[in-house]
Length: 332
Image 1 (cartoon, rainbow, N blue to C red):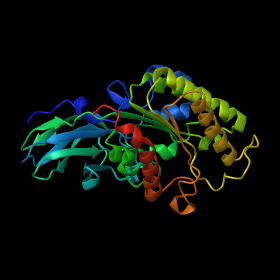
Image 2: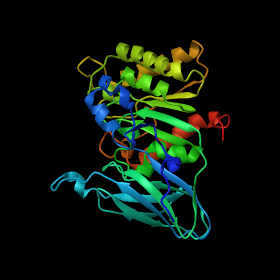
Image 3: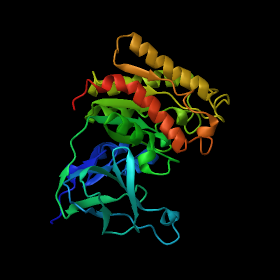
């Protein structure tokens, strides 16, 4: 069978830059910090979703990927393509990074609806796909869920992209999560709020704040006002969508330690939560707060900061619970 164009099959996409999925507006990168712009070039959370008719024995993906140089630590990362159906991983295929190559994943004979989670470190770009022994069709569109955050949202220390909390919660709610997490970033950068405002979506979640403790230190009053400004800018493009703010999860070393501006993470978390409560009290009836401080324990952290798979699952469960009352009102 001939190769199919990938565009109708891709999910978790935001913008395009020369055909590549990217996670910030390519026409507005000049206003972003360099580290955020660099992370935005990685296709975090981008997936291939399709229906296979019964008898289709495999799906083939033709893709391009960056090839790390000899000695680059990225060469040691496993380049895994994971095939999922519903909430279960059916198979993983590991491939060597290549400038252009094809990977084949075997399918169950009864057909159905499948997701392929792509490796992320080498920024693969899917060029085409095709079924072996049967036809493929794009999976039905689901409501788009825009998820802005930091390295925790991006999925750090989850063992696979499918285990990052936005992916887990997206499966639980039957949503199309668009992962806009930026490791080291999500420090209240207001241009990113304007990017979110321009991006279509039926649900929005904001999960930032921990990098405002030390990466770029903030005071509690500054973060209170920045949270109000960030939500206000997002609301310019999404005036009526459900908007959930998840305040920072546990970070033991920062909870009661003062940063360069004298704020503890506990105080920064309180400032963000107060900003959300005040906005809701002022009339934003679709603004929801999920306090993050009690969601995880130290045993859920892989390195004292980032959750392991269990921690990601606990965040996902809490986020899905907070959003579930809004899910039924969204288009199918």
